[in-house]
Amino acid sequence: MSLIDIDAFYKKRDELIDALEVGRIDKTEYFEQSLSYLETIGFKPSVVESLDFDDAVVHYQYFNLMAKYNFMEEEAKCFNQPAQAKRHHDQGFDYYTKKDQVTMRMLELSQYKHLKAYYIVLQSKSLEGQLFEIVFEAESRIVLHSKDKRILYRLTSAGVFEEKIQPSIIHEYVNTRYK
Image 1 (tube, rainbow, N blue to C red):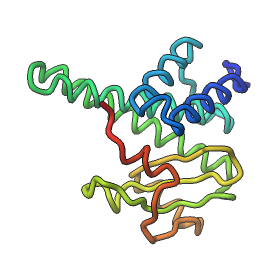
Image 2 (image 1 turned 135 degrees about the vertical axis):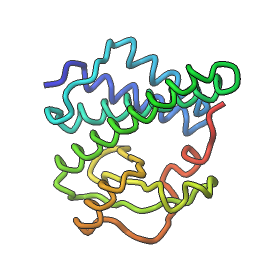
Image 3 (image 1 turned 180 degrees about the vertical axis):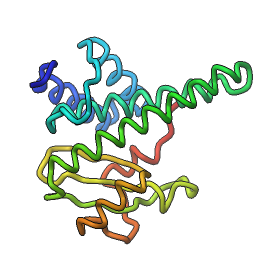
Image 4 (image 1 turned 135 degrees about the horizontal axis):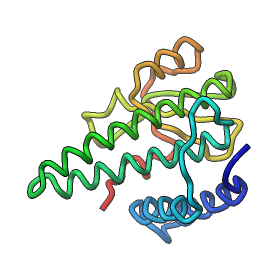
């Protein structure tokens, strides 16, 4: 049972995605407003193994946002506050690890059905062939990204990973840097 109003979460999430898609907000504003919303509703992470699919979506978004926040802080502090930059770097990777744990949970809950996964075309050539996209075709706007080799192995073993590099279904979003 969710500790938050899941319908309100999806409504707010859709509003922000719609605003992003039509250009009312940019990627950074999407990030900031998403994180602010989760803080406003008092979201606190739970044990990953106990999550249902909808709660896993909330957790994925939270961990992804927190990872990105910490990497932005690392970048901002890398020259004048190296110790704090390293702390943010380590926290960012910790959040990405948690995000990948949630992704594994979502895959288990879906039983690897109604999924497609593939490497995506990226402007960042250093990530191309590493970052892949997972689309939950039976769910509205559930698109995940990872570089985790364990997730890749499970997707490949389940026969849902396509080896061909393809454009992301949110190509512009994944190829736009935060300000």
